[in-house]
Structure formats: C-alpha cells, structure tokens
Amino acid sequence: MDLGPEHLRRFDELSGPALDYPAPVHGALRAVLQFAGTSVDGETSSAHPPLPRSDARY
Image (cartoon, rainbow, N blue to C red; front, side, top):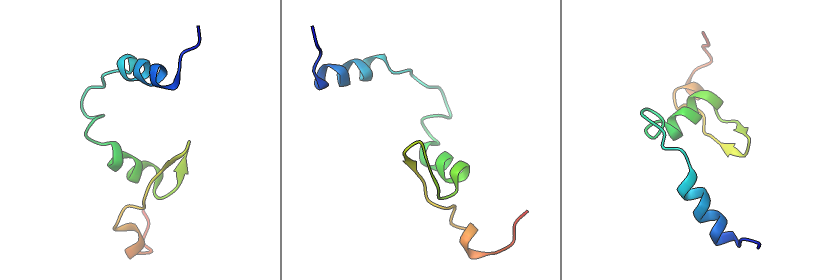
C-alpha cells in the first residue's frame, strides 16, 4: 500500500519531536545569528541588523 502526500504529511506532523525551550522561541533568531544572511540546507536567513551598519568585527 502506498501512502499519499496527505498521509505522509500527517505522519510527519504526529511523529515530529516536541522540542523544549528554547527551540520553539529562537527559530528565526537562531538562523540570523548562526547563518548571518546565508542559506544553509535550504533554510534562508537575513543578516543580523547591526552587522551591515559597521565594518568593525571582533
């Protein structure tokens, strides 16, 4: 028996892990700080707003 896309989506939804804090809170912020405007594994991010304002790097 083959499962259709809706069945697979539902299985994925039900079997996904329930992540503890801080995972649900920091999704977009994590990508901004970790990837700094690059795309990694298909996940795009924007640059952290203060970065383009200055050439100073630490």
